[in-house]
Amino acid sequence: MPRFFLPEIPSGDSVLLTGDDANHISRSLRMTVGDALTLCDGHGTDYQGEITEITARDVRVQLRSSAPSTGEPDVRVVLFQGLPKGDKMELIVQKSVELGVSEIVPFHAARSVSRPDGASAAKKAVRWQKVADEAAGQSQRGALPVVRTPVSFKEALQCAAGCDCVFLCYEGGGTALRGLLDRKPASVAVFIGPEGGFAPEEVAAAEAAGAVRITLGPRILRTETAPLAALSVIMFATGNM
Image (cartoon, rainbow, N blue to C red; front, side):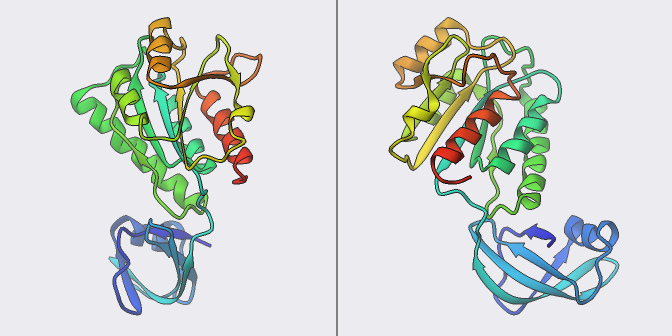
């Protein structure tokens, strides 16, 4: 069933959809009066509705019922991703959202080739957020994961300090991830390096800040593969997959 996110669901029995959502319903999906759809407030509640009116500019939906969303994991995972080259970040965002990530924080690593800043960084963040929103709708999420504007590695470590567990995926070896999740945490931070991996001084700084160096196995994974592997293990180990 088609799914659309609204920051706030107005009180009452009906909702008026406008802009991109209305265009997508009428022009792309070619939905008609009587078709059912789901509206989500982005905070864990789904509303089942039925289209009652379609005009050239908007779509009116009659709300029939509401219920808690079933697509949200019960563990909060924040992905700290070293900025990769090209458009790899879009793939990482899309697939991470599908797997259940709660927040994505891109960071400038010592070995990052891509270093957007200022207006360029803000523009990329807007694009990544759009990718995240679309992935959340497609995968039946109950909340919209946030994609942050790129930060420094030092700032990323500071942001991760509030999580119960902080893991740094390191190609140089570490503790197996599956053995660190026996006691289910409420929140997990995962650090993934860019194409060149983490510099030794970054590994040292992360461990000094309390991060645990982990391994995802004996094979070297690409920067766009590693976060998906880590998220899959976390979701499986915590009963969310």
